[in-house]
Length: 432
Image (tube, rainbow, N blue to C red; front, side, top):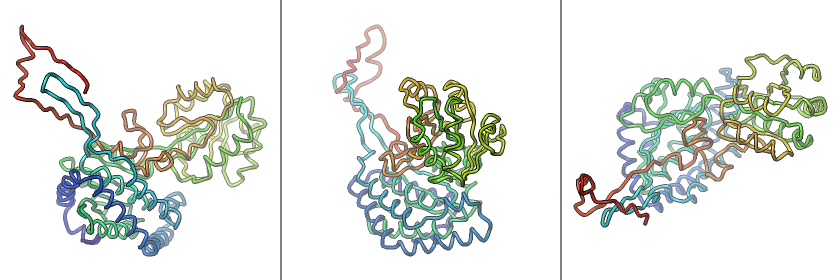
């Protein structure tokens, strides 16, 4: 069945189908799941021209409708993004099997043995604006981890998503993995329906703007893995290397400004500001700088308002603030940050350690760009998304975020009454 046929069924029927297929997928061998991923990679490679043509059509239509530059950047696939996504599928296939990992193996008593073993979550609901490569990444991680995937892309990526899903499902039809583990929803009304399918869907993964992710979080009872904002900071400490700091700031802001791990606020220690800020301004003429009062004494830039400190621009705009100390920088980040990724530039190891320990974020970096907050760059093969929640999984989430565990207890007629009362037998609780 090709992707264009998927919408014949209602979202409930689709979810039921996906759950059944996922239950079969969960018991397949690692080799069978890996062969399915390899088949997907080959099919995507063979159909690259078709995929790119569909994406170009999406981009043209979106531009005609006045799509924002940030969203267009997310939508555009291009040869390099596509090849990276295909490579990511093969990288996922090479990763250790996340299913069946023995976490606890313990004798409770003679002949009574407990095991805790990892297993799939079940069915993932993935909703994303633009970013067609997200469909490839999440599908590969879902299959590797034994989960079904119900996909809903934004209307701006309809052609891309339909083409990708058709290719993936056709590839799966040649393997032991049922094509029904990957389903595509295509209408906006189906988003609300998907969010209500807590009977069948185990995890919702939204990828897109902060307002979009927040909408998902506020309209479902299903657990949500995601982040509502990507307000990342870079702090230039008084003991920072200036040349290195300029280079890292440029990368963190301009390498891909639409990404959620690009910095939105730059904090600069007062001792370095007069020397550092002119160098930075000269190096990034395309970036609109907005500064606090002290910054504007050094640079002729637009004033930064209170709103700027809590804004995710996803564009070539950077709010700049001069601080008196590392303590002030940490306080600012913990007040306005979104707990995504924050970094410090300093040659002072004590200051670096203070920053890394006291900043409350999923990623805290020293002397490197926040743009490294990415599952592929972490060696996860790909990522299903980035989580800024306190409870794990946190940060870029790979396979480990898509499995849970079950307790398996095997005995020989053991009963709980033996271990209670005045003559209770003691447990051995011996790890095996």
